[in-house]
Length: 229
Ligand code: C5P
Image 1 (cartoon, rainbow, N blue to C red):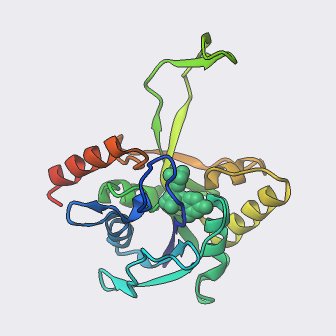
Image 2: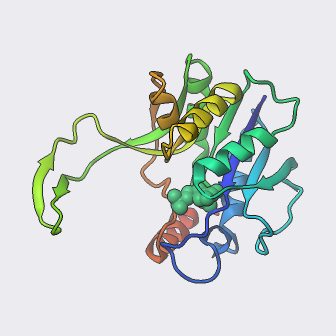
């Protein structure tokens, strides 16, 4: 039994426009609906807790999707606050030891094969796991004037994707510890790493993109259409 937490309380400032990006129409549905259906598609996933902004006028009010429960809670000022709110609001029947998937509302192109591999590998790992993709570009460090100062070796560097899979209790404690230390954890794995834990990297598809700009939206539309959605 696994639940998912989906942080969806961002304002999408980098995207621009009035409507937060997770509620833009993508292939005929709100973008977030693709992301929720993708995580709920696996048989092991029992339901989802969505962290939305307080008084969110855009939330479509789903109580279920794909025949599974959709619950909501109020998110926070940073992504980590929203994830924490979601973990704390999960039903009491989800024990501290149970695995929880965390998936960005803004990643609508998650592929069922990636989710299945993450669940299989993560649930067999002592710490947990995340989808990630190896860095392919050459990496530059900029100086204060925006000029290229040096080239960073990319060996061993990965881009963290979602979903990420950790136990409810361990992840809650790790996020709280980061928060109290004043550290902004930009993903779940970061909160665990700082406690000396080593989550497993599960190579995921490059097309599991996070919609951040209008160009990403067009790309996501293409990826979904190729997948027959
Ligand atoms: O802004 P970014 O694309 O990094 O956000 C990743 C995910 O985290 C999005 O689904 C966004 O809605 C969510 N988020 C959140 N609460 C925040 C900021 C972001 O739930 N305060």
